[in-house]
Image (tube, rainbow, N blue to C red; front, top):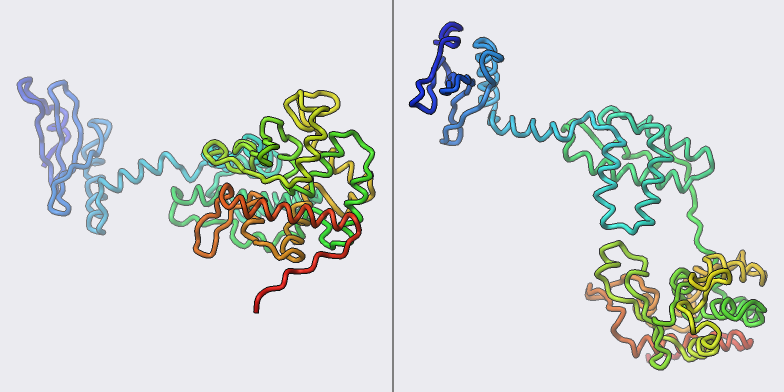
Length: 414
């Protein structure tokens, strides 16, 4: 058994790497030639000998070292390896339960940024800073109560932003799931069940006309539109091609091959996560002959520049995202039809009225779908089928515009 005097006077000869002075129960003081003295506990687990460092002498006294030894033995008796337990405690130290919501949220946000577009990343951070950080940002994750988070969400609801409150809750749910794996076992996801305490809201779809006769009235009004040639062409192409408004207004002449009747939208322009934008394939859009004719007519006016539909103030930028919508309002259809709604109009009538292949429709819409065998539908394949489909759609729109009856469904074999 060691004494304080023995520990104070313990030395190691210069010709040795270290000396050990044993106490009891596996505890020993290790002394180096330079005079440093450290406590260790020797024990066996799984048939292997291990050493647990207990601190330096005299900072850790003989009495304190014995108490640490006894505590480690209690751990071992309970089936816990003291060395492993020490490693876990160090790891926990890098993810303290005392981390604030703001710190964890920003860490989570930083991990997502490489997968997000810059615009989406900025929107997510702006919502955190506006709707959550002012109320719970400086609170530790472990101490935030469900009612605190709910109160912050209710403040968003109070300004009438019901959908924004729901989105804020989804953000919090992801942040808590990010934090929980490194939190204490007693912690839980406090976002569970909070959705039922928020005010229900109905997500508003983009207005879209899906009744053929009314859609024919819209087409006649669009063809009578008296705006600039670029805006008129963009307006007429919107139902023909049913692509996303952002892609349509940013169409570039370099993306078009009018002889091959193809519009190739670069992956970077598509609605995809950042990695898919960088590594994904371009979206190929077959052009019906009506679209090709419209574009050829416009080419002498805007073909000298980059954009098919240049803005009036600057030809270095495309028309704004409000241009087609404003045109629809000027025609008296703004409340019934939006630019994005042409996608829903086409999706509905292509199936309900023309009975065309839904998978090819989804491919033209640039939606990620799978066939019945679970394989991803390749948008660049089956172009022949897709060419036939878009041409049938364009011809159908011509009939609606001219006031013809709805095209009858093809007769199926019994």
